[in-house]
Length: 384
Image (cartoon, rainbow, N blue to C red; front, side, top):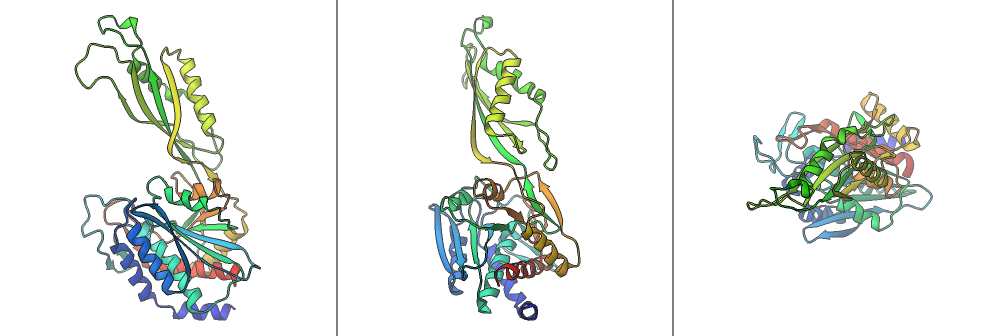
């Protein structure tokens, strides 16, 4: 088998891979506008004879789900990624939708995050299909919308109830695979005071002042600590209240939004209880209501002794001659949902580059080629 794999890797068309990546970059797919790219990917997979379905998120937003079914005597592996990008920012030296190739780099919006990951997945599928390799287990492909937004795509995907033994999210983490991450929640806060004439403020309860006292004391809350994931404080994102037009009335209502990046143990209930306790400690007179809004991501960790992870590290070393590091991320991704909502252990690993979420984003061609070989050999280990 090793000889066959070596021959396949030696002979696959790298120019075709780069051509596909460039085509993908040329198709704008900002969050909420992924349909055109989804249909392009669908066409690519259908040309290979792969079973494909489309999950509609909105009129202009879709997931692409595909599968190669095996004989039933092997595991089910999910290769996943997202189709969307952040909007292009000012400061690009070139057209962000016109890929530029320079030495080891390909520039373009989403080149690293994560259209090179999409190209990696398509290439692995093509290597399997073109070489008529029969699988023992199932390979599921999920390319999802809205990861850079509210993760509506992955939640729609999980609604189908699909199960897998492991998932590999082909995000741009090449030197260190991500096996855990902080969670994220938005706390929508409403403050109800008591209106009165501003000439007699002590007769009322100023909702804005009460909210301000609360916000100023958020640092008093002791956040939970975790051995692997960094604990983060509460962050105030916005505050709204008062009167748009001139008024001499003490404001009786305001709202503010908090962001909390969470560690395991900081559940919705735990966070709301912490906030309620702070309000009580400060002896504030206004009524406070705290609700968890969207997007919500639970924190997660994956067992460092996961067999599939050990295999990834072994294959990575064989291909790159380097050790694959492991890390826990301070940012959220669709993997949070796959692990904590879907119950699928998930590893983030894929080709990377630079200037991610910034002008002049680029991806490394060599990392792209290595990622294709690594994933192909990994899939072969379990499914061939």
